[in-house]
Length: 213
Image 1: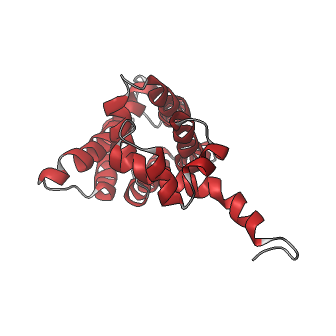
Image 2 (image 1 turned 120 degrees about the vertical axis):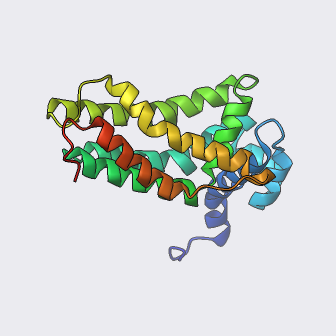
C-alpha cells in the first residue's frame, strides 16, 4: 500500500535493487559467475541493462549484494539464535540443524555454493565475500557455542573449531551432491533429514556423557 500522495514510480524505483538481487541470485545459481550475463539479470528483474548500472557498477558488486541481502540475513538469524541460547547444547544444535535444513531447501543457496567452489580460483573476490560474510560467520558462531558448552561441561575436550567444521561439513557435501550429481541421475538426499540425523550422530560423539536428550 503506497503512502498517501506517493507516486507509483517512486515505489517501483525503490523496489528495483531488491528485484535485481533476486534475479541475480537465480542467475548465479543456474549459470555460475563467469557465465552469468548482466543483460539476463536485468531482463529477469524487469529493468534495462542501463537501469541495472544505476544501482550496481560490476557483476562483483551484484554478487556482494546477493550475499548481503538474500543470504546473509538468514545467517544472521542463525547467529542470533546461537547467541541467545545459553544451553543445553543438544537443544541448540537440533534447532540450528533444523533451521539450516530448511534454509537449503527453500533458498537456492546450493547453486551459489557450487559456483563459489568452482570459480574461486578465477574470481577470488567472490570466495572472499562468501568466506567473510557467511562461512567464517557460521563457523565462528558454532565454534563459540561448542566452546561455551565445553566450559559448562556438556561437550568433551577437543578443538571447538574442528567440532564446528565437523558439524557443517556433511551439509556442504549434501548440497554439492544435489547440485552436481543429482542432475546427472544420482539419487538425491533429503537434506533436512540429513541435517537431523547428522546432529544426533554428532551429539553422541561430542557430549561428555551419553545424556543427549
